[in-house]
Image: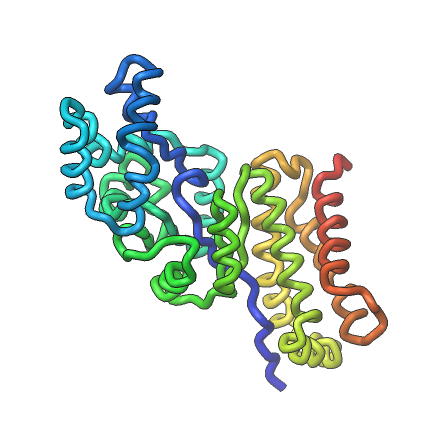
Length: 320
């Protein structure tokens, strides 16, 4: 008997750029160019508006957009030109806790990708100068920038393109974005998704994603058929293939251990022990799965996820 491969959980992480990894903000540049804060705010609100630069995020030509805007605002040509000529300076400020997260994930061997709504010039910057100013950006395997590929979040096409770029299926990845609509778009495209608000909240949500993906093995009808085979034959499989079973459990727990480690680093789970606590959460989920598969529990999927997540987070946040 050869042990069958267990259904996979998200093992690839796709990050948004601005608002998650880097504090993209035109003010980081224009504070250098316009001394009066009120005048700077007027310029950003009335000249280089959100509506204007959003067009380039969706595939518009930066040079042409600059020329057209300069024609509308005589005397402000240099300030308008700076928006894209000095675009990199808007990316000067990073979020240290998220940089640390990227570095930890990379050290664990997690494949990392970046998916951003931004002008095409971001792609050139990411593949060159950014790797010197922000070395952590060189840890990503590839980048998908909306202005270059001519489609943008939350359209399904760009998530599908990110998956093709990395050579992975949507269910193998978790996507992290600070815009709720973009996270929901990724979820609709088949990816696990996290609406990022802070490093601590993202770590907690990763635990919930793991719990949901694990319980799906018993609550998703298609997956449950396969999981039931493991449940019925588990003693035989464990006795004949102990090393394989141990390796599979280790692979299963690795994303959860990583999420707990991230939470500990961010302060969300200050006293957590990743290996011990992941095993405890795994045992609870395994019990819930067995009850469901054997027909001894009437608990619904959402109720089971809520119960397991509540237990997991209470365990991880405990001071004991």
